[in-house]
Length: 470
Image 1 (cartoon, one colour):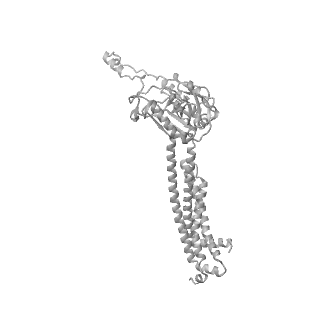
Image 2: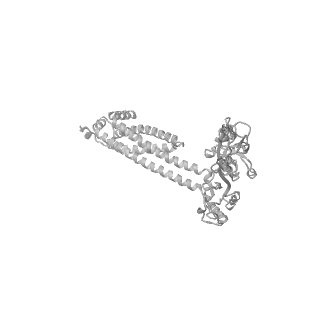
Image 3: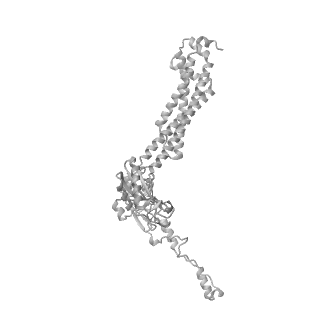
């Protein structure tokens, strides 16, 4: 018997029991698809973890002030709950305590409100005095009132010049700066106030223009460096570098646009840090206690030195401010915990998928064995006509292999569909297809191994005994 005859008999056997064959194919497709998806999820979790830990922000040590006096263990100076404890540029000198630290910078979240034409028009309409219509006076209303009544009436009039709800009054039209040129497409931007070493620590370069320098930070220059997405969409023509933006009474010059990073920085702007106060044009987001949100970042080149650098920084800040006055954290530790959790979830999913594959493979073996029993007479006739044990073995193995191939094709389709669903749901990339291919290969080997047993049993059937079966 040749390969063509084996395939012909295998296809005929499938059509003789169509429902049974369809159920087998469906079970194999689901189990192979689940197993391949499990391999793909595990491979993606490992790959994503490696890529995450390559990011520069996971080679940093972050130092922040404690949020309240209750969080401080042993301050050197007694402080009240109303006192703000903020870090400043001088604290960046802590970089010198550890040779492992390459860069240090200060960072704080901020927002930039742009003086758009809509804002100017709204303020102009607010400042325009309303038209007052004179009411006709009757003789009684024209009569002079008593001094007491006049005083009460004057007190009842609202004081328009007083701010409402304790908030400072909005700026007047005279306080707002304006610039020439096209207007931005948005009225507000989110970003960070940083010092100059931020760009070196993050290994981010300017695609257009340049980034600001230490001298720019020292001079308090009003400069902006835009992330890739912000630079591309801030103006309708996509040209941002060299233009100016007015924010309250300040004018900022856009000096550069960063290269695309694939991170949140693509949607941010960066301006020289000045530990923004409430009077700045770029209004800083404030913390829950009313203090600043600035943080110090110390970057190392070798992630294995983070632990020693953290210990040295802790000792330095404790000696300057007191034990527990600052919070020192290593984002890499949290990232590693998240990666470990994701990998464990992927492993559990893979184990469950392999269990399903094992059950499906056992079912394939049992059904092929039952087919062997039902076709013993056919086996006897084939052997009487000259078929060898090897021919019978190959015939049943081909039948199992055909079921496996069809099931694997549908299983791969399930993997691709599942990958697209995950990609559209969470916006992340698809599976690691090398791992998916490995999953399909492992699933096929396991399933094929379970078809060997009934094929061997069919090959061992004696011709004389097989011919006596009714």
